Length: 262
Image (cartoon, rainbow, N blue to C red; front, side, top):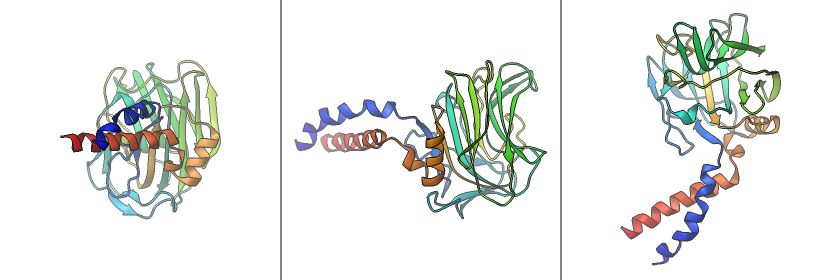
C-alpha cells in the first residue's frame, strides 16, 4: 500500500518531462540507441560502424568510427525535425572534402527542385557547412570554420524559428549566423526520410563521413552560446534541465508502482 500512496505525487511530476528540450541523444559508446529515454533508436546499415573507440574527451565516453559506407539510420519521426532546433556533436574527420556529412535530416524532392531539412557537410573547400532547405530549389548554405583532419571538433547547428536565425558554432564559438526569412522547413514536409548519422543524402545514400563521431544530441530549441559551450566542456548530461531528471525519475518510480500493484 505504501507504493500506491506515492501515485499522486509521482504523477504530479510527470508534466515536467514534456517541457524538456532534449529530443534524442546518441552517445555512440557501444550502440546506436537513443539514451534520452524517448526511444528514437537507430541501427547500423550499409557497412561498418565500429563502436567503443576513443572518445572526444573524458565527458563523452567512447565514440563510433565510420571507416566505409556504414552509417546509422534513425527512422523518421516528427520529433527529430522540430521547427526550432539545436544539433550538436563531436566529429573527427579523417580528411577534408567530398561533402562528407556527420549528420543529415533532409528530404530532397526532384533532385533539388524542392529541399527540406538540414545537412552538416565537410565541403570540398575544407570547411564545415550548414545547409538548410525551405521547400524552394537549392539549399541555403552557410560556411563555418575550417576542417582540421584527425582532430576532434565540437559542432553545433541552431535554427530559431521565432527569429528566422540560423547559426553554426565550432568548438563553442559562433562561427557564422544569418537572420533571414525562408531559410528552413523540416524534413517530413513532403517526404519522410530517416535521420542519418555518418551519411549525407536521402535517396541513393552517399556523402559518407570518414572518421569518428561522438555524443550526438538533438534539442527542440535553439540553445544559446552558454548552453552550447557547456555541452562542449561538460557533456550532454550537464545540459539536461534538472526538472527533466526528476521527471524521468518519476516515470521510473511510476513503473515500479504499477509492477508492484500488478
